[in-house]
Image 1 (cartoon, rainbow, N blue to C red):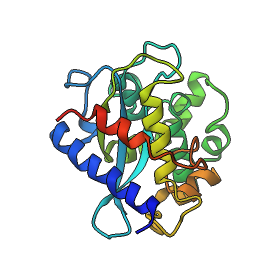
Image 2 (cartoon, helix red, strand yellow; image 1 turned 90 degrees about the vertical axis):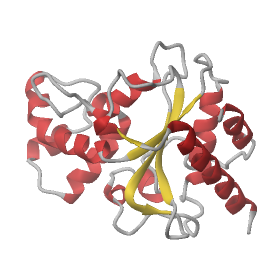
Image 3 (cartoon, one colour; image 1 turned 90 degrees about the horizontal axis):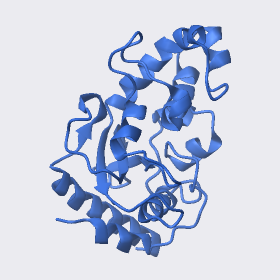
Length: 233
């Protein structure tokens, strides 16, 4: 076993311990803000059909955190952006301009389904959009919410303040670099049917992750020690 494989195995062992701490994985569609969430943390999403090369262990497909610069954002506020809206005039929709995770999933759904030209032309354009454009994009936002909402995830409490040196940033960047298949496709690559293979970003397709930042970096295994230090059982 090479060093990279050993680090991956340790990472997934830590996730197995984290799952016990969390009391199991949650699905985002079933979550709300009144649940017991830490103020700050790192999240790890999985996806049906995505397994490690052992054929049994669920494979992480997205890692993220929130507000590494000066910010009042919380773990739940970020997760809720990915989940989308519950009520309002477009229930079940969301705002992909406020969630890069939603944006990537939307581009993959666009490539794999039949959508109107108006949605194709407006999706991911600009940092905001008028209400008529948002209304036109609503069907795709619904589909994105359904896809992400069904994905199980775990969360690691890392309650340090926003900073470029935050432990949350260390765990996020280290996890993504370690998991990325962009340079190591022989280890834990995405399945041939993974939706992300239809995304418009090469880095998503090649890495096997719904991430673009850090996917081409060399992993620093020391992040695993930081992860384990915050894993309070």
